[in-house]
Image (tube, rainbow, N blue to C red; front, side):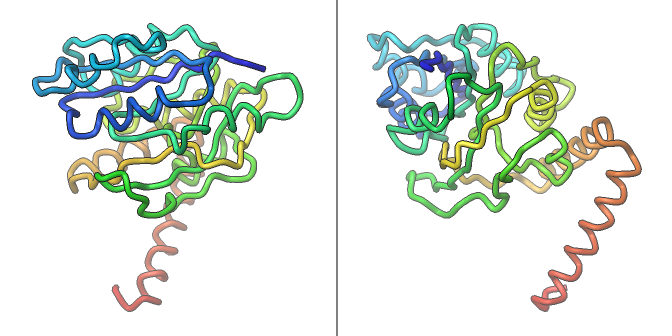
Length: 251
């Protein structure tokens, strides 16, 4: 009941936010962690900030060019040796210093589940609380739950390393969505911690990136849930969106 948790942070030119992330991990009351930072050969002070903590026995890092976010996340998994992996990106943080300890203690019995999940808080660039994530984690999560979208973001999704596949680099914007579905398909036991596990840094996507991400998610949904099911769901999404706008008078 004391699993080793591998926490992976990917970063690139993140000098403004990286220290907050590092401190949130290294200040955990739970001691059985390894912390891996994968930097994409930053040109700012990111690595100088990371190296301030080089004496910490839990910390290791790699800094070199990569092929984007998901390539860096794959590199992190290659280095991980823990029972579980957990991706906390630069700018995001664990919710409190007791988060991992509370998460592990939330598991009933003596057998650790394949997946543990929870809720996500949204914070601004100063780390101040903005609100809870709009999509709430379902009481019971399965791979079929993601037909309704990414109900649990990867910052609040902890999975056993043994069932985690590589991220599919064909997807540039939504590989984490596909990866999470793959993990859930392999998982035999899935535990809802009923805890807020992470603080997600609020950041606006450009219109073009948002569209590209939605296109990729649509492709991923068709692959896993079938064309007919996904098409009917999106018709329902469109109708629901229209009536919501009609009620607010913003159509």
